[in-house]
Image: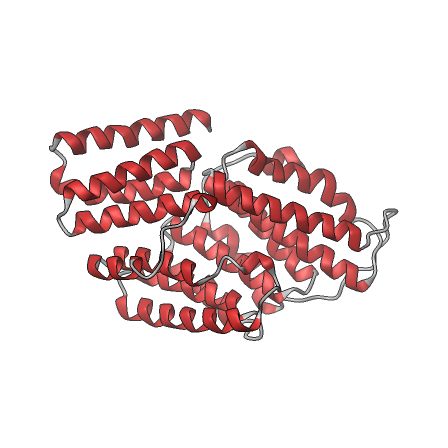
Length: 345
């Protein structure tokens, strides 16, 4: 695909996912095509790609997807990785090559998603799903599909998000338990957005069991899913109960895990905004605004469009106090950030 055409962005369209998702669900693996290129790919190339993916993943967690280094991942995929995909390789090296490239494409989509470039993100995710299939890596494929479900969820397509998350879980039951647990966690969040407390609680409990099992079985394998820890369960559970309008449960889950640190700055900003919303739901305006202000300052530094989405959810909880001077000032701060991010885009 032409890189300039690939980077031309437009709004998220959930139907774009239909065909590639269906193709993966029908068959998540395929025979490896015979290599015919001039470059001979070996494990040294694959190790380079793995280290590049690890570096990009850490940078994204700490500084967000709108920074220059995160955006440069797309250029790296085209300029460095594409020639390798056209190279010569053994069966094992070819599978490894497609697998690591699928994770890099997923990560490029994730950073674009964070920067508000939703169609670019969709294109990367579709590429990643196709690459995972070419590498017959059902673990990465399921993970990519769950990430696609999360994008659909965050854009307001909850029913489609549930379908994709269920597909990621049910199609490859032999996948890493942590991968399957992540799929159930995304499904739980989608049910919460639909205010289906019973379904959300059931999926959350399944995600917990799978995380515990995966932590015992998969130590050292698939570093890209190691983020799916008890801490991640706690963070997403606070969101689930915020969306269900149950602030006491939000606070109870928050108490089970520490606040994300500097290495996960975006996650910290998200948790702060979720807690701020829960305090507003409890009628505690002063405490709510303190946490909301901290979240706003953090997202302003990260320049995260996805962070702005969380702040918008929080501002809706401030409606009962929309005439209060402190609330008026806060809402202006959110509008100013939205204007800055729109200009930067």
